[in-house]
Image 1 (cartoon, rainbow, N blue to C red):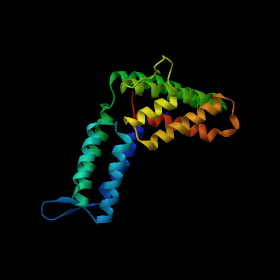
Image 2: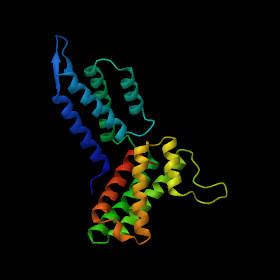
Image 3: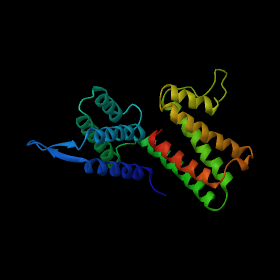
Image 4: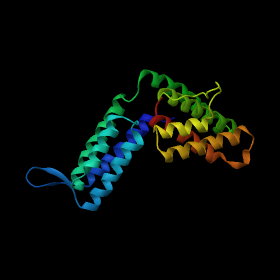
Length: 222
């Protein structure tokens, strides 16, 4: 099983290599610029998207990237600043600075369960694998809610529905509406498996569920 942090580092390395391939020195100062405004605009968009996709909400990486993007300026210059933020993000992932001790404990525990789901799936048990991966997601959402000071119980002391917690997390926002919709779909697959609606999904859907839940937990540690 590939460590999610390694996957993130590889994604960032690939992006940074692509960025460097589009750079060339200009003038006597040796400043690096992009070959054309279209190149710079595309790279700028990709760099900003990477920071949003791979860094925690509220982190210095996101705040810095958003500030750079909002200030604007020459496309190549803005893209260069964003590239610096992405390099810092990549290096901090590589150094292991992106997780607290509590997050590491949770991540290790959940990683074990997701690995069990992978093994069940490999042995042909797609339905238990879907239930297990979905249960990991549900518990992770509850931990995200607690970390964000959100209630996980109703006023009468009952457990909140996971869909409600998902909506609450998107309102903070811990993650955006697009991810909220993705979480809703993952929970739907888990419910299909738990309620015996096995014909609504196949092995490929469960593989994607396990992969996407693992990546989601990496983006939003709890």
